[in-house]
Length: 120
Length: 98
Length: 130
Image (cartoon, rainbow over all chains, first blue to last red; front, side, top):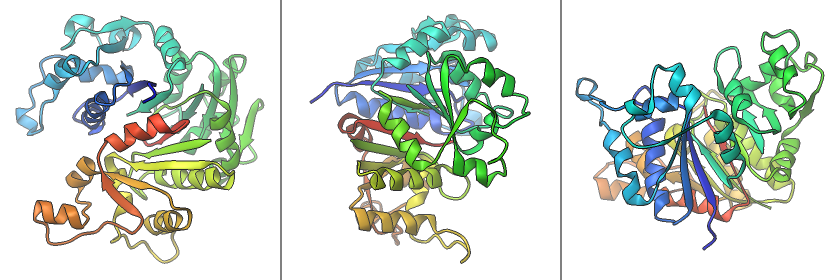
């Protein structure tokens, strides 16, 4: 099968809408297709990776742990926009998984190289 | 790359995010994104400033529907759905800035 | 050229499904192939045959169904998203013990793998959403 570069672009915060959770479901399914997969987190998308989600009070499934499981699925390319982190008072230490923090321009470069960009 | 933006820049950050990240190519404004391409809106200057880096397009049926068919800023090419398809076909990849 | 189209929002609230429909028609009119239209998130709500808009409004669901029948379009509704939102075909009704079905003609329910496959097989994938 052909290998394509897939990037999942996350620009939305978790819980307020379902996009983050259902995006993650696509990534996990997509891993089985052995494509070149990466995830980008920009703007409010960086909130998805903030550690310490306690969702008991809103009775929603906390899916923070799923990000930690991504490497078991060989999804290792997690790119986080530095500018978006800074704008939200966050640093890489606040995130629940190891990521590559990079400039927005660098993420833009990576986007330009993709075959398929799925936005959520 | 063809960047597709469907949000008003006065309400949401999609277009700004696109401009900050994208490395050139084209921007196609559809749905509420077309307001960015209308004369006199507060984002017009920002869009003008990136005209050297991007080719700018707006979807005609969405402009018309919103009463702005005759108030498109200079430098923006208006296309119909067939033109939308051509734009997707002629760019190597596309991204919808949702 | 082969196109794949993803629809992330339901009918009427967002323009996404309308835009995707007009885009799909234009793809076909230009002589291109539509490999698949994949409905995800609230987009699965485009597939309920129980939709009854006012008579002077477009029927978004029927419009997709007709396009599918006329052009042999593959309209795929994500099973996980559909289960959450109550979009049910015969198989799903049996499996989950539901007393009704509502999947509109021309649509089929299948897995998320169909979206990834569409991304692999098609030359371009265009996402419509909010």
